[in-house]
Every structure is written in structure tokens, then in C-alpha cells.
Image (cartoon, rainbow, N blue to C red; front, side, top):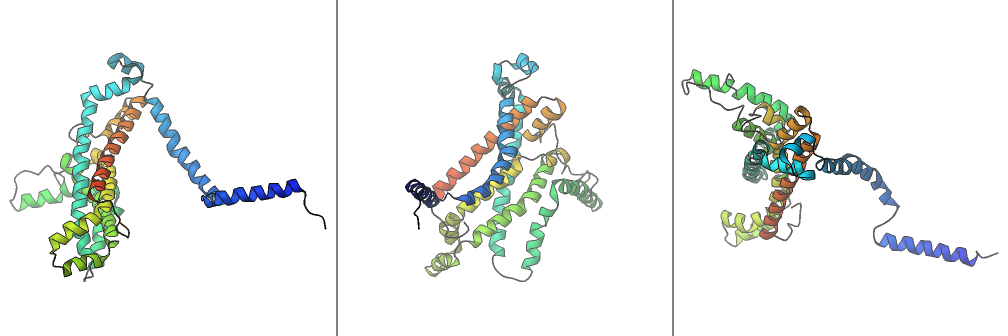
Length: 311
């Protein structure tokens, strides 16, 4: 029986040793399963993002002539054109209160529904039902129910509570109602999930030691729930910040609800100014990242541990 050549045996051992070292670092052939996801990310995110970023430095001749700034003309125009730059404040004025309200309103509901009681499933279903509606159907429902000729105004006029219809849609209030209706179910489900990951025995031990519900919430539940609150606020804020259908259907598209998404659409679809539309989109991302960073810093200062569960 002949033994394998010395060179081939050494190469085999070297390959096996390399595979062993790579496996110790979590690198093996199973990583090939990530290839489709990487191709998907490159095709639908990385390339469009880099292409859009490049467009922001290719202003049109009209933008350069009006605002100057060379390759940065789009950014100069964004900050100097008050009709566009004011959309930042108008968007934040909608997104921040809507996200904050959805998170704060979800906390007591999640606390209530973590206990068993009669009708819990029905109440939970009603709370998450708006998820199935979508923003367009929600806006249509608001127009039918709260419009100037809607059911609510007609009822209030008939019973003599008001003389003139209330302006509840086609303004700031209409968009805010839409953001709350569509955003609250997501916030409620997320907070309920994080709350279920907190060990009940911790709160029970504090109660045994004489802590009332305020002390238990402030010193135990809130710090443990902080990661979940931060994540929930970030997700609901991003959803509200990118609002488009509600701002157009139940808002004042060129007035009090002139959000950044509408300005980007105006530049893209009406003015055919793709570089400016890309600039507005990039600025939307920058502002969102700034808010997300601030929220994560708040979370790190409030609590640096782990709930030991989903939180």
C-alpha cells in the first residue's frame, strides 16, 4: 500500500487547518446563504443610495444660476429656499408629537392587557385592527367621518352643539389623527412584547418590600422598559416622519402639512428636478439619524443593562 505524496498530504492538512481556523471564527460554507440577501441589499439599497447621493452634487443649471454654490447648489437651495426648508419644521411638528403620543398612550394599555380578564382578546383585536386599514383607507375614513359634511359634524350640528362644521381634516389635525390611528397599533404591539419580557418576580419582590405602584414603575419597570420605549419611539417616529399619503389626502399639502416627503415629490414629479429631490431625501435621512442618535443616547443614560428577556 502506497502512502500519499508528502506535498499532497501537507496541502490537505493545511486546507483542513485553514477550514478549522475559519470555522472557529464563524466562517464556513453556510455563509453562502447570505449571498442572495447581500445582492438584494446592493441592488435595492446600496446602489440607489449612492446614486442618489451622487445626484445631489449634480445641480441643474437653473439651480446653480439662482442659488450658486457650485456642486453644493442643491444644499444651498435647500437651506435658503424657505418654502423647502420650512418643511423640516412642519414635518418634525407632526412626527415628534405623533410618535410621543403613540408611545405614551401604549404604555397604560399594554400594562392593562398583560393581565387576563374577560374580553381581553376582543379589546386587543380592536386596538390592532387599524393595521389592516392602511394609510389611504384611514384617510378616506377620516374624510367621511370628520369632514365638513361628515357624520360627526352633521351630528353635532343636529343636536345643537355647534353652528358651523369643525375643521378636523385637510389641516394639521387631520394628518395627526391619521398618524395616531395608523401608528398606535405598532407602538402597542411593540411595547406589549417588551413588557412581556420583564420578569414579573422583580416587581413582585419590590411590592413585598413595600414599594407602591409609582415606585415600582419609576425604579423598576421604566428602566427595564427603556430599551423597548426607545426602539418603539424610533420606529413610530420614522413611520410618521416619512408621512406622504396622509399629508396629501387629509392635510394641507402646500400649507401646514407641507412635509419633506411632499417637497421631494414636488421636486421629482412636478419640477422634474431629480438632484433636488435626492437632496431632500438625503436631508430626511440625516434628520432621522440625528433624532435616532438622541433617543439612543437618552436610553444609554437611563439604563445600560438588560431586562433578561425581550427588552
